[in-house]
Length: 499
Ligand code: NAP
Image (cartoon, rainbow, N blue to C red; front, top):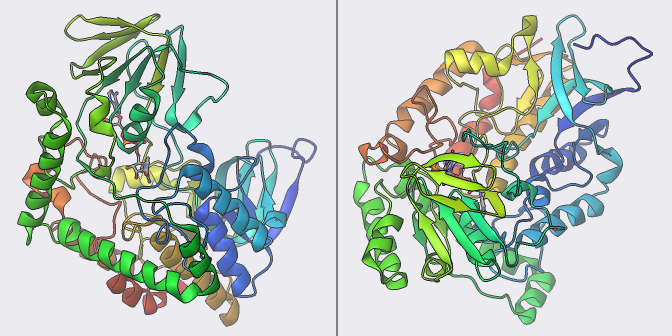
């Protein structure tokens, strides 16, 4: 709750619904609310534009690794994707276009960094406070703060002492040129995979600090010819058919490789062999190849695709460093073997705090959601709601990420949240809370299913995967098919207490 006086709090807005975040999740929630005729909502975002992760990730080479027809809203097709996998700039443009097309901008308060949301049991309302002291009060909150919104700054000794240029992939400084510079990239995840080959031709020397190698498959990317774009535009059904084929294929891939890995372990083993064959075709030096070969199972952490990553290490001006980093010095990086590399620039490609909440969420009795999850293991009802946090929906919460494409997750979580708000309104009730027993049942089912996923396979022991948290839980993905989830959502309203 706020503690400032009226004179200190510049603004107070009241709405029926507050949406946190104007990324694809928040925009999706706005679209669904409007479609249900719920127009009294506001979208809060700390940035100065829509697009969330697509706005912030502008590093060289940024590109989706999910096909564009699937990595977009099903209800807002874009016929003009230039290639099978959309470049980051096109995703950002798509977000802006959707916001304009659906007239969502008037609903958005940019430059509004949410710092807290607190539930008032007497009023049955949430008060959301921003960093500038402005406050927003609403009956309902849909939190679309995103899974990839808080950059993870590595705890490497000396990180604050570096006197050269340091930047994170999520905060790329385009006014700075890496051309002719001695550059280090720390990390070899999906972002590094794209940055490394893109900047390598420009830098004087590039040193890549790898802690855990990533599984990489070739990327079957191609330009979408203008004629095909025209077909998609004039016959939208054609793009919907392509989308269905892509989404069905990825759904099957996820089901066999991730969700049912325990029953079908040979699938990921076979894919790993294919990935190794690809690596062999790209890297001739056996020592280098060995360093780039993961020692954990395929799928334990997010694999990615690239046609240029491996070959970048064949360059004379690129070094792969696998000795652990001892410390960052004012002038470079020293590894545990005593080797020190002098640097002008350090790029942190060290990812995100995947499970982090970007603001404090206080439910009934002031209970802090992150503290509760930390102490009691992460839990939710249907990946969206949490007992003790009435009228509050996470899109997504624990066990809420469905399928390969973030847009599947948004579609399912946001639709459910909006349906429940509409139901509360229609029933004339002002409080809707996930039932504790229904939540326990859902979580039990999810944890049982997680036992069958690749994350629980012994092959993941040395993967350092962010899918597993400190409790040994893998609460990120909902280990079900999209069809199963859609089916479950049809009766999910039964798991709420309305009053
Ligand atoms: P990430 O996958 O979490 O990779 C972070 C990398 O930094 C890992 O290699 C990690 O090593 C390393 N690292 C972290 N802390 C370190 C430390 N203290 N010392 C040395 N190395 C350290 O992050 P990301 O590459 O930004 O990708 C995050 C997610 O964004 C992806 O999983 C994907 O979902 C999404 N993404 C998608 C695309 C796309 O094409 N759609 C592109 C980029 C990102 P360990 O593995 O040992 O922890």
